[in-house]
Image (cartoon, rainbow, N blue to C red; front, side, top):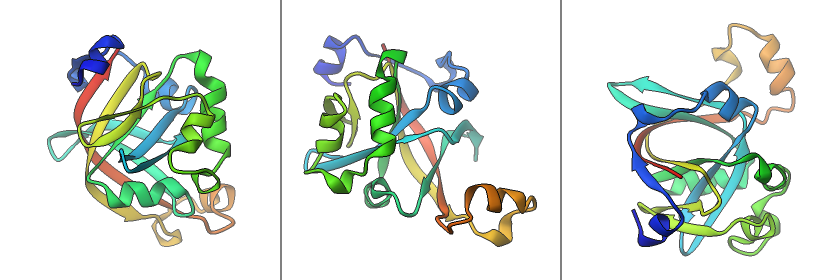
Length: 177
């Protein structure tokens, strides 16, 4: 943990010490998926994903549409962050979900949303977060029509063919204010 993180009030905890209801935190409050470093990073809002245990590891599952600019940053990095914010940052998360990083200079999307980048454990996150999960990629797979038992999901979420890639990543650090 950096000195700046300590100044901001972050403490490192274990994944087992998380006190979030992940259904509310991800599905209703949303999170940011962020990857990159000081040379360039990007973020996106997500309301799909999960936390759990796979392969005897504490993991996060992140789903990223193949068309999203953030996907290339996640693909090019070993780690990414999932970060959670207090309600007063709802507009920033809405902005990060509605705007593409392709339309801004390097790291400009987060700045335009009012977020302050910081770099930790080889990846990027934002000072305004209340909880940050640093995730090391273990596995990825592209969703496809053949894998769905409930075909109505395809009609409801993938009619345009913009599939998700699913990343399963080990949670290697958790920082909480």
